[in-house]
Amino acid sequence: MQGSANLNVMIKAARLAGRSLVKDFREVENLQVSMKGAGDFVSRADLAAEKIIRDELMGTRPNYGWCGEESDEVEGTDPTRRWIVDPLDGTTNFLHGLPHWAVSIALEYKGEIVAGVIFDPAKDEMFVAEKGQGAWLNESRLRVSGRNKMIEACFATGLPFGGRADLPETLQDLARVLPVCSGVRRWGAAALDLAYVAAGRYDGYWERGLHAWDIAAGIVIAREAGALVEPITKGGDIMADGELVCANEPLFDQFAKVIRGN
Ligand code: IPD
Image (cartoon, rainbow, N blue to C red; front, side):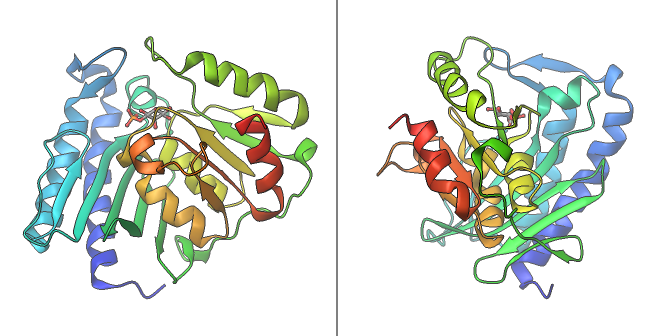
């Protein structure tokens, strides 16, 4: 794919951060970890990766805004553009030595995500998309699955941890979805859940209680691969509310109906 200059900067930043994270992942047992809120761990690796990405992106586009998981938000002198970054999505997996985590970088323009990069260095998988240009995994074009029967579909979600308030809703979701599908996975990295819908590995995904940096890049990648992505509450705002339902087109209405409970 011939990406724009911005996409190329995002890919470069993701690779640099990925290299640093892989080194730290090998030494995961020696990492210094600190507690940040209930059940939410931040590692030294996470902070180092965010600095690498920030230096690269803000060094190249100093006028853009910045929204990263590990640092304060900055409004750019260009108020229309903002980087939205999760340097390490799947932190709990990383800290437990589970090789399922990713770097997630998005570019927002006038409130819309126009480019996204999700890099999984452990599997050397680079998912990228730009609005109107399709979605790609390494050199291959991505397309969502063609499954159209709920009972054959495999979905992903996230389960609330550490006393999060959305546990009852999620349990109700599961009680409605599990009997009518072929399986639900909880692999612990929202960015990769969306990328996997784009790749046709999952047929759909839903989750509540997310942050913009968990999902920004994944939204454009999933949409560019043909997925529909909507707020769970009709008329809501995905990024502000932190909840979404996503699936291939043939399944979307059936799946969203089950998740919305109506
Ligand atoms: C988490 C992961 C997880 C999701 C959580 C997120 P983090 O992001 O994406 O899959 O269920 O809600 O907070 O903390 O690893 O960047």
